[in-house]
Length: 246
Image (spheres, rainbow, N blue to C red):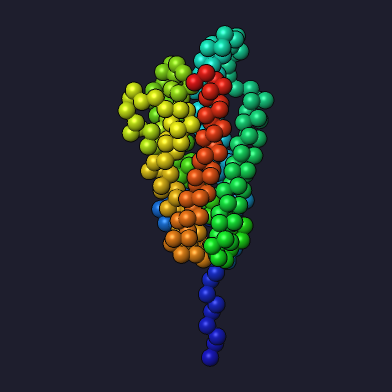
Protein backbone atom coordinates (compact mmCIF):
# COMPACT_ATOMS: atom_id res chain seq x y z
CA UNK A 1 0.00 0.00 0.00
CA UNK A 2 1.35 3.40 -0.96
CA UNK A 3 2.32 5.72 1.85
CA UNK A 4 -0.02 8.68 2.36
CA UNK A 5 1.19 11.96 0.91
CA UNK A 6 2.76 14.26 3.51
CA UNK A 7 0.66 17.15 4.69
CA UNK A 8 1.60 20.55 3.32
CA UNK A 9 3.36 22.83 5.76
CA UNK A 10 2.74 26.58 5.97
CA UNK A 11 6.14 27.26 4.43
CA UNK A 12 5.48 25.00 1.39
CA UNK A 13 3.10 27.56 -0.10
CA UNK A 14 5.16 30.58 0.84
CA UNK A 15 5.73 33.07 -1.96
CA UNK A 16 7.97 35.98 -0.94
CA UNK A 17 6.29 39.40 -1.02
CA UNK A 18 2.90 38.13 -2.21
CA UNK A 19 2.31 35.84 0.76
CA UNK A 20 3.49 38.46 3.24
CA UNK A 21 1.42 41.18 1.60
CA UNK A 22 -1.72 39.05 1.83
CA UNK A 23 -0.91 38.19 5.43
CA UNK A 24 -0.52 41.86 6.33
CA UNK A 25 -3.92 42.58 4.80
CA UNK A 26 -5.52 39.63 6.60
CA UNK A 27 -3.83 40.09 9.98
CA UNK A 28 -6.22 42.73 11.41
CA UNK A 29 -9.24 40.54 10.59
CA UNK A 30 -7.91 36.98 11.01
CA UNK A 31 -4.86 37.30 13.26
CA UNK A 32 -4.97 33.78 14.67
CA UNK A 33 -4.84 32.18 11.23
CA UNK A 34 -2.02 34.49 10.10
CA UNK A 35 0.09 33.76 13.17
CA UNK A 36 -0.61 30.02 13.03
CA UNK A 37 0.75 29.96 9.48
CA UNK A 38 4.05 31.24 10.86
CA UNK A 39 4.56 29.07 13.91
CA UNK A 40 7.20 26.98 12.13
CA UNK A 41 8.75 29.76 10.05
CA UNK A 42 8.01 33.29 11.36
CA UNK A 43 8.74 36.11 8.93
CA UNK A 44 9.71 39.72 9.54
CA UNK A 45 12.02 41.32 6.97
CA UNK A 46 9.77 41.24 3.89
CA UNK A 47 6.68 42.45 5.83
CA UNK A 48 8.83 45.17 7.37
CA UNK A 49 9.93 46.37 3.92
CA UNK A 50 6.30 46.40 2.75
CA UNK A 51 5.24 48.42 5.80
CA UNK A 52 8.09 50.88 5.18
CA UNK A 53 7.08 51.36 1.53
CA UNK A 54 3.44 52.09 2.37
CA UNK A 55 4.37 54.37 5.29
CA UNK A 56 6.77 56.32 3.10
CA UNK A 57 4.15 56.81 0.39
CA UNK A 58 1.71 58.11 2.99
CA UNK A 59 4.43 60.40 4.32
CA UNK A 60 4.91 61.85 0.84
CA UNK A 61 1.18 62.43 0.52
CA UNK A 62 1.18 64.30 3.82
CA UNK A 63 4.20 66.45 2.92
CA UNK A 64 2.09 69.57 2.06
CA UNK A 65 0.62 69.49 5.57
CA UNK A 66 4.05 68.98 7.13
CA UNK A 67 5.39 71.90 5.11
CA UNK A 68 2.51 74.07 6.30
CA UNK A 69 3.32 73.20 9.92
CA UNK A 70 6.94 74.24 9.36
CA UNK A 71 5.76 77.54 7.88
CA UNK A 72 3.48 78.21 10.86
CA UNK A 73 6.26 77.44 13.35
CA UNK A 74 8.84 79.62 11.56
CA UNK A 75 6.37 82.48 11.25
CA UNK A 76 5.63 82.26 14.96
CA UNK A 77 9.35 82.36 15.73
CA UNK A 78 9.83 85.31 13.38
CA UNK A 79 12.16 83.43 11.05
CA UNK A 80 12.13 83.46 7.23
CA UNK A 81 10.19 80.67 5.57
CA UNK A 82 12.30 78.76 2.99
CA UNK A 83 10.76 77.73 -0.34
CA UNK A 84 8.56 74.65 -0.06
CA UNK A 85 8.34 71.58 -2.20
CA UNK A 86 10.02 68.19 -2.24
CA UNK A 87 13.67 67.82 -3.16
CA UNK A 88 15.85 64.79 -3.78
CA UNK A 89 17.52 65.36 -0.43
CA UNK A 90 14.23 65.63 1.48
CA UNK A 91 12.77 62.56 -0.21
CA UNK A 92 15.91 60.53 0.47
CA UNK A 93 15.99 61.73 4.06
CA UNK A 94 12.35 60.83 4.52
CA UNK A 95 12.90 57.35 3.12
CA UNK A 96 15.89 56.70 5.37
CA UNK A 97 14.02 58.10 8.37
CA UNK A 98 11.02 55.86 7.73
CA UNK A 99 13.18 52.75 7.38
CA UNK A 100 15.23 53.43 10.51
CA UNK A 101 12.30 54.57 12.68
CA UNK A 102 10.12 51.59 11.74
CA UNK A 103 12.92 49.11 12.41
CA UNK A 104 13.89 50.69 15.73
CA UNK A 105 10.30 50.88 16.98
CA UNK A 106 9.59 47.28 15.93
CA UNK A 107 12.77 46.05 17.63
CA UNK A 108 12.01 47.90 20.87
CA UNK A 109 8.39 46.71 20.98
CA UNK A 110 9.45 43.12 20.21
CA UNK A 111 12.16 43.31 22.87
CA UNK A 112 9.66 44.41 25.51
CA UNK A 113 7.27 41.62 24.52
CA UNK A 114 10.07 39.05 24.58
CA UNK A 115 11.28 40.06 28.05
CA UNK A 116 7.74 40.19 29.43
CA UNK A 117 6.92 36.71 28.13
CA UNK A 118 10.18 35.27 29.44
CA UNK A 119 9.37 36.66 32.89
CA UNK A 120 5.93 35.05 32.73
CA UNK A 121 7.22 31.68 31.57
CA UNK A 122 6.42 31.89 27.88
CA UNK A 123 8.19 29.86 25.22
CA UNK A 124 9.16 32.08 22.32
CA UNK A 125 11.98 33.76 20.43
CA UNK A 126 12.82 37.37 19.65
CA UNK A 127 12.12 36.72 15.96
CA UNK A 128 8.62 35.52 16.77
CA UNK A 129 8.01 38.69 18.75
CA UNK A 130 9.19 40.69 15.74
CA UNK A 131 6.60 38.78 13.72
CA UNK A 132 3.88 39.56 16.25
CA UNK A 133 4.81 43.23 16.18
CA UNK A 134 5.02 43.70 12.41
CA UNK A 135 1.76 41.90 11.66
CA UNK A 136 -0.09 44.13 14.14
CA UNK A 137 1.38 47.18 12.37
CA UNK A 138 -1.20 47.41 9.53
CA UNK A 139 -3.63 49.00 11.98
CA UNK A 140 -1.11 51.80 12.58
CA UNK A 141 -0.87 52.18 8.80
CA UNK A 142 -4.66 52.40 8.67
CA UNK A 143 -4.49 55.25 11.15
CA UNK A 144 -2.01 57.01 8.86
CA UNK A 145 -4.48 56.63 5.99
CA UNK A 146 -7.36 58.01 8.05
CA UNK A 147 -5.18 60.90 9.20
CA UNK A 148 -4.39 61.80 5.61
CA UNK A 149 -8.08 61.62 4.66
CA UNK A 150 -9.09 63.94 7.51
CA UNK A 151 -6.31 66.43 6.76
CA UNK A 152 -7.25 66.43 3.07
CA UNK A 153 -10.87 67.19 3.93
CA UNK A 154 -9.81 70.06 6.19
CA UNK A 155 -7.33 71.44 3.65
CA UNK A 156 -3.82 72.82 4.07
CA UNK A 157 -5.06 76.35 4.80
CA UNK A 158 -6.88 75.09 7.91
CA UNK A 159 -3.53 74.54 9.64
CA UNK A 160 -2.86 77.64 11.73
CA UNK A 161 -1.01 75.95 14.59
CA UNK A 162 0.86 72.71 15.25
CA UNK A 163 -2.25 71.28 16.88
CA UNK A 164 -4.29 71.75 13.71
CA UNK A 165 -2.13 69.08 12.06
CA UNK A 166 -2.95 66.56 14.79
CA UNK A 167 -5.74 64.13 13.93
CA UNK A 168 -6.99 62.16 16.90
CA UNK A 169 -9.15 59.06 17.12
CA UNK A 170 -8.56 58.65 20.85
CA UNK A 171 -9.81 59.44 24.32
CA UNK A 172 -8.78 63.11 24.16
CA UNK A 173 -11.91 63.70 22.07
CA UNK A 174 -13.89 63.14 25.30
CA UNK A 175 -12.27 66.15 26.97
CA UNK A 176 -14.38 69.33 27.26
CA UNK A 177 -13.60 71.90 24.61
CA UNK A 178 -12.29 74.37 27.20
CA UNK A 179 -10.20 71.83 29.09
CA UNK A 180 -6.61 72.89 29.75
CA UNK A 181 -4.25 69.91 29.76
CA UNK A 182 -0.57 69.45 29.13
CA UNK A 183 0.63 68.44 25.65
CA UNK A 184 1.83 65.13 27.13
CA UNK A 185 -1.55 64.25 28.60
CA UNK A 186 -3.44 65.30 25.48
CA UNK A 187 -1.19 63.22 23.21
CA UNK A 188 -1.27 60.29 25.64
CA UNK A 189 -5.07 60.26 25.64
CA UNK A 190 -5.05 60.59 21.85
CA UNK A 191 -3.08 57.35 21.70
CA UNK A 192 -5.80 55.41 23.49
CA UNK A 193 -8.73 54.70 21.21
CA UNK A 194 -10.52 52.07 19.12
CA UNK A 195 -7.62 51.60 16.69
CA UNK A 196 -5.14 51.17 19.54
CA UNK A 197 -7.40 48.61 21.20
CA UNK A 198 -7.76 46.77 17.88
CA UNK A 199 -3.98 46.64 17.54
CA UNK A 200 -3.70 45.38 21.12
CA UNK A 201 -6.14 42.56 20.40
CA UNK A 202 -4.13 41.49 17.35
CA UNK A 203 -0.96 41.56 19.45
CA UNK A 204 -2.57 39.46 22.19
CA UNK A 205 -3.63 36.83 19.65
CA UNK A 206 -0.06 36.77 18.32
CA UNK A 207 1.38 36.35 21.82
CA UNK A 208 -0.96 33.47 22.60
CA UNK A 209 -0.15 31.78 19.29
CA UNK A 210 3.59 32.38 18.97
CA UNK A 211 4.41 33.00 22.62
CA UNK A 212 2.55 29.99 24.04
CA UNK A 213 1.05 31.87 26.97
CA UNK A 214 -2.43 32.21 28.37
CA UNK A 215 -4.81 35.09 27.85
CA UNK A 216 -3.87 36.89 31.07
CA UNK A 217 -0.13 36.77 30.39
CA UNK A 218 -0.66 37.83 26.77
CA UNK A 219 -2.71 40.85 27.77
CA UNK A 220 -0.20 41.82 30.47
CA UNK A 221 2.73 41.68 28.05
CA UNK A 222 0.82 43.53 25.33
CA UNK A 223 -0.30 46.28 27.70
CA UNK A 224 3.21 46.73 29.13
CA UNK A 225 4.66 47.08 25.64
CA UNK A 226 1.87 49.40 24.52
CA UNK A 227 2.13 51.74 27.51
CA UNK A 228 5.93 51.93 27.43
CA UNK A 229 5.99 52.64 23.69
CA UNK A 230 3.14 55.15 23.93
CA UNK A 231 4.74 57.03 26.83
CA UNK A 232 8.07 57.26 25.02
CA UNK A 233 6.59 58.46 21.72
CA UNK A 234 4.27 60.91 23.48
CA UNK A 235 7.17 62.37 25.48
CA UNK A 236 9.09 63.03 22.26
CA UNK A 237 5.99 64.46 20.57
CA UNK A 238 5.18 66.73 23.51
CA UNK A 239 8.74 68.08 23.59
CA UNK A 240 8.54 68.79 19.85
CA UNK A 241 5.24 70.63 20.19
CA UNK A 242 6.53 72.72 23.11
CA UNK A 243 9.65 73.59 21.17
CA UNK A 244 7.43 74.68 18.29
CA UNK A 245 5.47 76.94 20.60
CA UNK A 246 2.39 74.73 20.79
